Length: 135
Image (cartoon, rainbow, N blue to C red; front, top):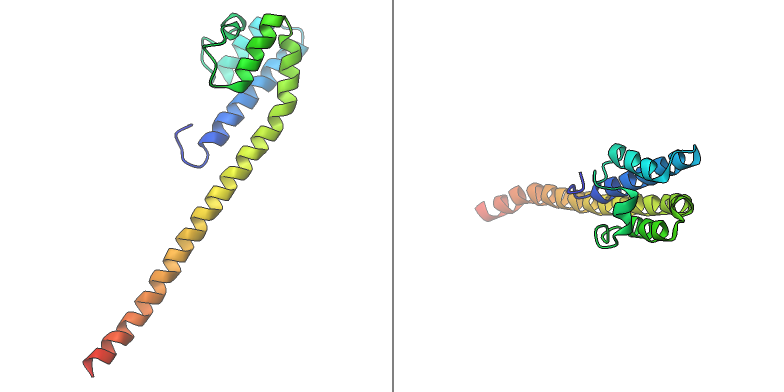
């Protein structure tokens, strides 16, 4: 659900982290890197066309810095090492996305509360002004 206003970026970041962690786990357990990336992509809402050979084409996944870095590492033959590095780095990216989402939601709730209290105060004082106009 990347289109959702507050949790869209968190969702995308979480799915990318899930992909990286699962692919790294499979690589560490002895699965071939190409198979690990393909299986991790199926599970974590990544494009089905995501394979090791597809990562080597730098134009296809230029929108994601993690996938483009994996593509460069795959061309150099260092994909498992880059997976481990991306897993370590991605934890802070997810935390930052959560903090930004929390701050945006907090601002929206503050504004909503401000408008509600303002309307409540106006609704309380309007009858007083009407009584003054009658006399």
